[in-house]
Image 1 (tube, one colour):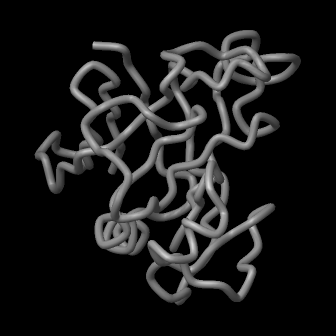
Image 2 (tube, rainbow, N blue to C red):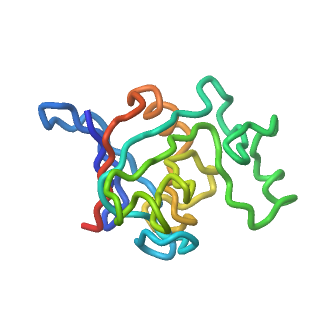
Length: 160
């Protein structure tokens, strides 16, 4: 099993070992485009793997800060009280780069940049780049996807 992410199409595709498409999900990548440098707020390209799965069993819309659930649940009213916050909800799949010098180690390390595939508020746009570099998914989609993929599943992030 592997995951293909197309930045141009704003689509995440789950593919089995025979190359068959199992699922496709509309996503949102970095508003600042693609790039690997720390602090760029861009989505890193290249070969990655899911290094950690966080949030199994958490409620839909559970809020995470620093990869830990806060005990709070996102709602439109909660968002109004905390404007401009980068919401990380429901589940987190923490990515690690596999290409030293491109997306691993030094100032281009995907994992040290805290790049995740994670849930987002129902109000978040999908299909257009809007994140701070992570890959955002609808909460119902991230729950399904989280349960389908094991840790260390390969993830390829492409511009095309």
